[in-house]
Length: 294
Image 1 (tube, helix red, strand yellow):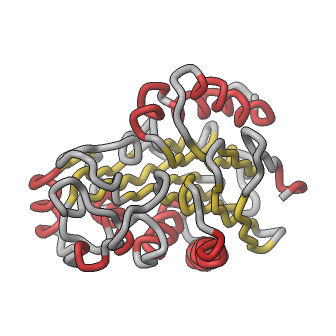
Image 2 (cartoon, helix red, strand yellow):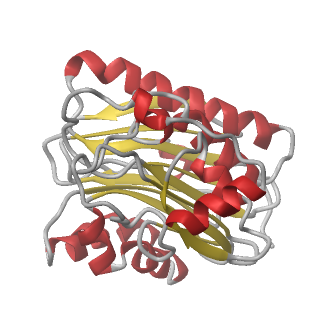
């Protein structure tokens, strides 16, 4: 197993972000990254850091996850979340989960016996494990939210182990029971210590159709780090759709890209400290690669 310094990336969603909310998106991503970095600095595992970052984003009503989740067609909040550990390819995932403050932690509780639970089955498991309940409908935005988004984190710890985590409140006005790409390993996220870790945000049905997380991890496994972002959006172009992604390869190199109007990202490493950006480029993608560049 490789070793070295830690690194991490956090995103707050690929979407149109109004100018008056830009700073809140940057600040929220940076605060979540700080939660993860505190764990990694102390030698903690990547999977715990990724969960901590996403928990922070779920508590921030700026983002469409947890307290910021949107309402479906029936006026309910249904959340999807997942977490994956690159060391042993373990994952936990929940879909269409109602009534819990931190869906990502419900997913993390499934890591010991990897499973994907949905609806009432996910809620029953959450209650059995003592997950904190929360009436998320009380926090839902009163008006329509522009764009589509998910929150996520990828992290690499000092041992070289990787993890990815995602969480989302779905799409405004979507069908009851709709589950997007976020909780699906190989679509919305993936982590493999032999290759890298990736987390996506965007149009879930398009991401699922192109299995984007599996594809980008395949690029990293083949040593195509520099080409990975561009290849991802070439694949997405086959079916259309909007997306953003963050990724770390097994060496700790970091990259992100998007074809959405904006993409809020925070990142850092043992050598660079933390910083946040809100990408507004009109170019089809944005790339920052390698510890030196970031």
